[in-house]
Image 1 (tube, one colour):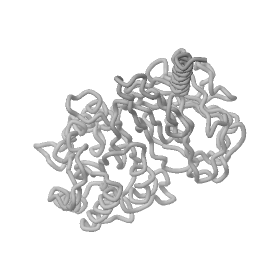
Image 2 (cartoon, one colour):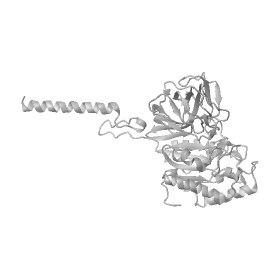
Image 3 (spheres, helix red, strand yellow):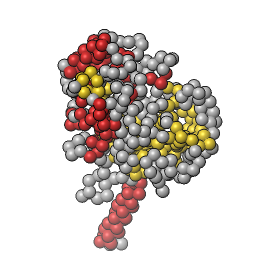
Image 4 (cartoon, one colour):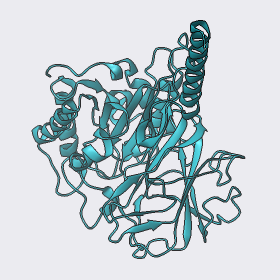
Length: 436
């Protein structure tokens, strides 16, 4: 063999190796991504790599065990309907058995896009079975939670998702969120992957087991968590309309020029307090905001900022906290713990409740003292003045009539929109200050 022929053969072999290596790289998508997923590598040196990240698109804070569910929902499919804030190309969910007393066995879990707003029918071609560590079933221990493996599903922002769980056997009390303002569905038997909604003959106002939905997004740059009480929970918003103030904020972050492209995660619990856990007479009020802060807010996927709306129930509910300095100290503790995670905190003033059955001059005096501390800039990094936004200029101790749901405490849909409009979205992306 001549030297020229040898060089020719060697060059040919090198070219073949390069081609095979490129084919392998493209075929397997390059580096391993989160939770064993894959990320596509660059297709050519001139094309930049596609970047992305996991971002929370929806969440709910579980409040307690659902009354009357000592044996759970054995032999039933639960189809939770939830609404996204941002979209992505892949998705995964978080399930909780926090208030369970026995292991929760789920033999079938699925996800799909809803065919219509609030519908139990899946959009054609979108049904996906979910796995957990590569297995099609999972058992969540009492007090535990789990995140599913990701699946490829193009999820839009501002869309309804169907997340269905099926438990084949009794499993103890169901962990739930009681004031969803959204209709979900139940069916007897395993109908987790039924695209048609005909088996789902029972309706429910709750979310069960499901606490979070994440998407893999190349557009969203993080998420903001709103944590608070019934006003953040949206208890008086129109059911099924997604008119909580957090929903209106999500629309601003999706559409408004210059706004950070963040998902919005709602961690409101109706009746919740800053300093005190709920008692046996009102278990659905949940643990105190300070008790649940890490789980429901600071550890959420992609969180970049926190908005806090809390305090009125600390005044209303026994044992009442009527020392404004102690309320403000609890709020500063929220900020301290958020700063330890590198998160900026926007806090709201306490909203007016004149005319409500729980109103008294003494309680209002405490509310106004707390608000003066908040407005002074010594509590939160930033302030959103929901009191100023919602109050009636002619009767400042009361809600503006157009913003009053009718109970003189909770806003109407118009009031919730006004709250969202008051948030300075530009400040949500700012860095944590060195010190207050």
